[in-house]
Length: 349
Image 1 (spheres, rainbow, N blue to C red):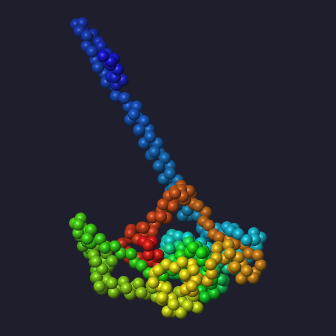
Image 2 (image 1 turned 60 degrees about the vertical axis):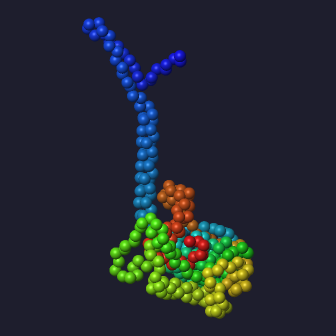
Image 3 (image 1 turned 30 degrees about the horizontal axis):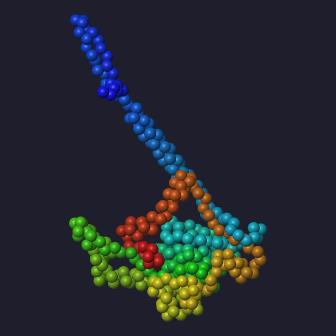
């Protein structure tokens, strides 16, 4: 028979009473080692969370009261000693907040800098919100009134990406890489009909509203003919605006030619050139060199803009910021009950 191991949680003791009887007393000692260890870890985690939270609050306070002078200028290429500059501005995201504000700030800074003689706008975007695309286009148009803009399309310059490329006006030039996809000219308002799913799970939508169209495009009802009439008018107005900016930016194309390509389809770089949508095949370095030659102002310094990271950015980390960027479009499409119109590549939603 195996030896019985003593229970570390139990101890025994004996005592003798006055009449000589021996009484055995069992004392149970609860070991708290494991509980104590978990308690220490929990306190440590709470302390770490408290420190991070306080640092973030301190950072937010500092960011709020810190004076903002706009984006910082950084050397990209060219002559480091040249006083005259070319501004390189990148649009490499879906066109929507908070990126819109940063792009507008960069264009504004380049516009106000007398030493900047031209801009190369680098577009690698599937497009984005109608209003944001037009805000950027408008600011670029103001710049193009006095200084030239060359557009370098990279992987994708579709829908709103092509819209802002028209900001260079009739004097601007459009360049695409050999593998660029562009076009997707049109407007889309995402809508999801979940009425059948709602019926299956027993969900009913009964909004309290003040007008017939207040819940227009609700996911819980089919689109009525009257709804469609209203939204068709809104879509057509945004669509005609898109055609108009192309007409201004590509004056060699007729209105009919523009309408023929404005079907929402994607074009390769060679197809875009054949249809008059793009001027040349080129890479960024070559496009910058072309602008420097066309300016005929001697050696140029090419600069771009960046934003210094705040303490909040550092605390959150780049991984968190990246995840937020990936989710932001999904939030715009699904997270808001308000209808949103997009100049956006069809498959992006």
